[in-house]
Length: 314
Image (cartoon, rainbow, N blue to C red; front, side):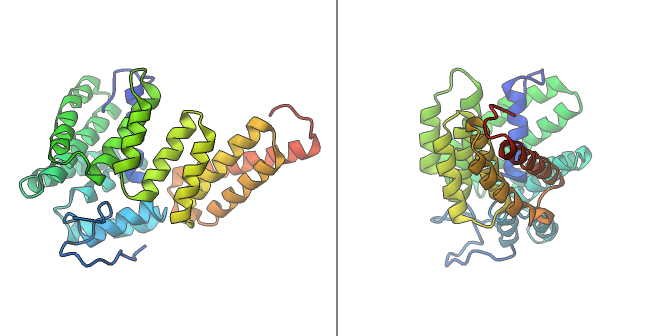
């Protein structure tokens, strides 16, 4: 899942997409449960031992779209749950998003080390996060220009993903993370069988709000816009106050409005952008910049189309 040697290959796109899994595309309220294990945001049944603060940080990012809140929770999670590799993987991705490559390198190594410690007691999650740790290290190497070393990580990543799959191919956490990769490959490689990939992801990946979000962006990129909109609506039905999902819905509506030169769709898009902007203090700085840019653009498009309804394009 790492990169080829040039920036325009599909594998380079995968690196960026994988980082987004931890930084975007998932506050202090935990899901109550009656199991003996601590919180597990992936598995409603047969949960694994994932700490409450790790769960809270994951849900702050992906369920609530609250990056700033998640950063505070993660600082405590490292102290309270030092053996949970997901904590370090999320921290690595925050560092990547902030262009703190040495911080990313440190957290990638801690992801790998904690996953190796976890593997004897939980081989599925241990192998899954050994793969993630190697992937994050490969991303660091790529950023530093060590292309051959980065590519050399690829086999190790897939080796450990395959080991996790051999334990339980239907595991929700495994299918979420590997499923994102498979969905991405299905859009950019000619030999992927996208329908089979999508079907498996729909059946096994969890939690629901992340599954629907991934399907929405996949269908968007496959130019199946009705299915994309249906899935973003499903995600919003579960997490209606998530500003990232509101932003995506606005983006989908804007694209639809631009394709059909539909003033009403553009106005709806601007309403969703405005909702997301009300919570911009929760979002990553990079996303806030993009959100403001797109909101300003759609306001301009609305004005132009209102003044000239026969306009053929922007």
